[in-house]
Image: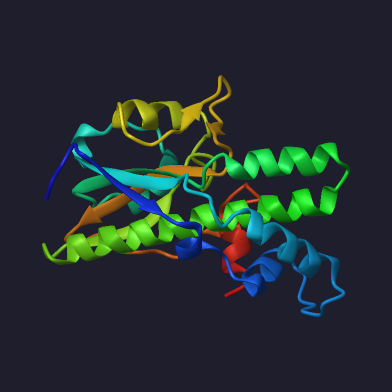
Length: 223
């Protein structure tokens, strides 16, 4: 296992783009008819994203005892049997920000809303791929991984973003933090994944989480 080294991955939009039915489900718009405005927006937006080459991300594995993060009691319990932590960051690139800004400036608010949803789903699907790669790598060493957890979710304060980025140090993914600890590009995710021989995946405890707009809550509600 290579530790303290950032493992970087790059994806084309075609590799991780959400399907129209996934977008509609995420937006609670089940009508698949051609006259549905959401479907019209999807058909308009997707071709503008096919050349997106900014979808990058990766992870750095560190010994759990060497990582100092204020992740809160809930996630700390899930990480209790982790021997290592995979610190991750992933972005869908700047194209979504620019497209949303253009649509909003032109008063095309539905298109901006749908673009936002596609960006959220795209970065999560890219991170799914990275997590799968991590799981396969760890499996070869007889290890397992946990779910992934991010600042701002599961009662981990979003201000924890700064500590997380400090732990990763310099890494080759173009994501930065604002003063309020929000990531730029906005369609980016970061967080931790537990690794160990005795770690396990738990169901997300949405019933005790304070964040009613959590993307994981939205995705899980569709399963």
